[in-house]
Length: 262
Ligand SMILES: Nc1nc2c(ncn2[C@@H]2O[C@H](COP(=O)(O)OP(=O)(O)OP(=O)(O)O)[C@@H](O)[C@H]2O)c(=O)[nH]1
Ligand SMILES: [Mg+2]
Image (cartoon, rainbow, N blue to C red):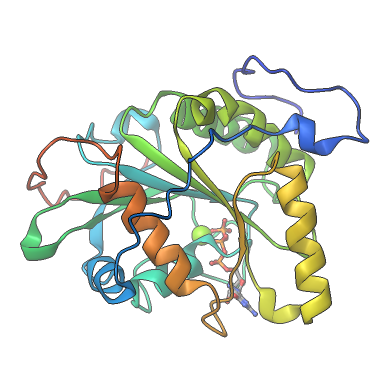
């Protein structure tokens, strides 16, 4: 990456040998386990997911009052597949073998009886070499601004292919969101495609990811084996309904038509 989206203030050590110091330090109690819902409640809620809107630019994103959870990570890391798995819907988010499949921010509403009480955001991946430089820079600006300015952003799930580990672009993203994590933004590193690793490799990848994310929350996930699905479903429910979740009453949202791409 040659352009860094609006650099955030950081206490990061310049040392490459101490990656843990470069990542945001989640506040104590960031992941509250005391309010664990029944996984069935979390799954039922996630299954209500429906397409809300797609936004190629930030200004196309509707301002929302309900908590939003963003899925971010390298291209091909498995973001769209993860959303489909969590919501138990085959084609809610576009997943593909071809990297760069998701090209706009896609929002999905959650909530029973058509009343939206949270939103999931599927973001385009970064780091795909075949994308022209201008498009990369444009997208990095959009994503940096989204992560820094989206007011209702409640949590970020950073998806990592454990065979690649945290890349430079992932670390830049961690730095960008660090100030917001310190202010209470929820944050989870999800090691996807864990079915590709044996037990020892998976545990090693998990320890490294925990270190690299400054001791933050990291979990294993596999869409193929349905590993980690219960835990992540409950975590998302907690983030959006647990202590500290937005106190506003849920409100119905219009089911938008996607804006024309420019
Ligand atoms: N084996 C395995 N493959 C997976 C898993 N999750 C995703 N994949 C595959 O990885 C590829 C990329 O998945 P996507 O969900 O499209 O990835 P993405 O992060 O949304 O990619 P972009 O939209 O390009 O940013 C697809 O071929 C998926 O089938 C998993 O848990 N296990
Ligand atoms: Mg995608």
